[in-house]
Image (cartoon, rainbow, N blue to C red):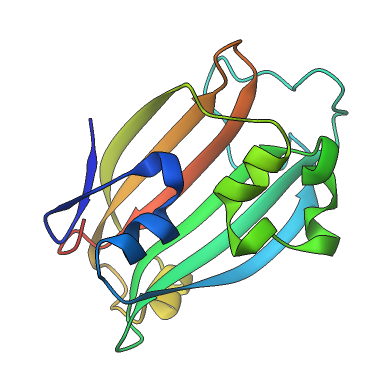
Length: 167
């Protein structure tokens, strides 16, 4: 499968921010928050995701990002959960490497080799609608993608709420 934005394929391997910029689209990414959460309190992770070796039960990092088009309307709202290992454990204090989660994962030695993704349609809740500058109840795509390294280590789970007119 592949993701397109305004009909242009996005290279997910380089990260969406860079892929969107390479497509010529003016999109601004705003980090809404980076915090430590317990695995139990992280967004529900799919079956098969185990707490990574070396991580404790209270060591996941959640990154929330909003992507906006030039007029300020949101096109995506993303919540990523990554293991709090190596430099990823310090993201709440240091922020993302080059303002990129992909670069931060690579700096931690985590390179995605495979993944699973599910797509559904959801109606926006009040908080999502406010952040995306849309109406409560508007239909958006909801993707849930889980990624692993070639040797089977968990890399990331990301829940994305995407504007269906753009993605």
